[in-house]
Amino acid sequence: MYDLRVDVKPIETCCSPVLTAPLDEREAEELAAAFKVLADPARLRLLSLVASAPGGEACACDLVEPVGRSQPTVSHHMAVLVEAGLLEREKRGRWAWYRVVPERLAVLRDALGPGSARS
Amino acid sequence: MYDLRVDVKPIETCCSPVLTAPLDEREAEELAAAFKVLADPARLRLLSLVASAPGGEACACDLVEPVGRSQPTVSHHMAVLVEAGLLEREKRGRWAWYRVVPERLAVLRDALGPGSARS
DNA sequence: CAAACTGATCGACGTATGTCAATGTATGAT
DNA sequence: ATCATACATTGACATACGTCGATCAGTTTG
Image (tube, rainbow over all chains, first blue to last red; front, side, top):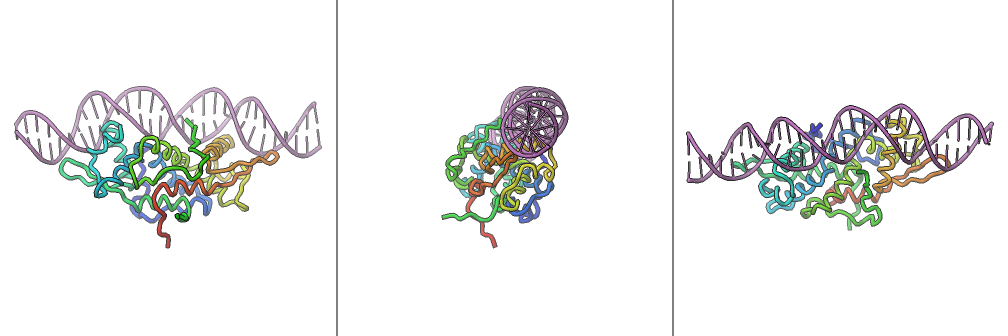
């Protein structure tokens, strides 16, 4: 069950904070599906690799080696991240370039509660 | 593999933001394990039920029916949440009372990036 | 002590998921 | 056209995980 299109369209429309009110089953399933995407080491590493790449974008060809997985596995995870709205893919020639969608991460962060008191 | 004690002791010591620098395999595994705990609808509902309970605490006996799972399943999920440091358990007589540990959730939220600009 | 109740543990089962090798499919170069 | 490259897709496999029924353990009441 990899149909993790967690409502990628309305990027602000999701998930009241977990601590505010009891979630119903539907809300909980959506939020859980979103967190499931982040609940894998390879995907977290790929996400952070793209995020910290020069220019904010990274070529898939530069991800396979640092993440230590096979090329098909990387391709699989990138597809999951794109489908979840956390990454954008742009194909240039025979290369695939990825960029993070920070607003999407922000939605998940906000679901964990009110903004933190950062120093 | 339910050994999800994601370093429950040093509650502030975890996980540089995903977008800041590339995560190594170890960091990624820890963060992924933490998110995995949140990546289940039943656990999210239990968490939100406890969070929004009067007095900030809830008895396990009041969670089984609203979450729509069997008693053993609820007990299992509560154990996972406690082990991850997201909940505290206190046994009173034959009842088990749970309280959320907001600092723990804050750590995960911060891992998703800098504090958001809430309106 | 016996009975009742709350919650934890165990065992089993079905499904989901991460991984890779093999293969397919565009795109660019010779 | 032919070949090489970059990435996606497929198939298979092992493991992880959510779920429940049955049972166990501790506590309170009669």
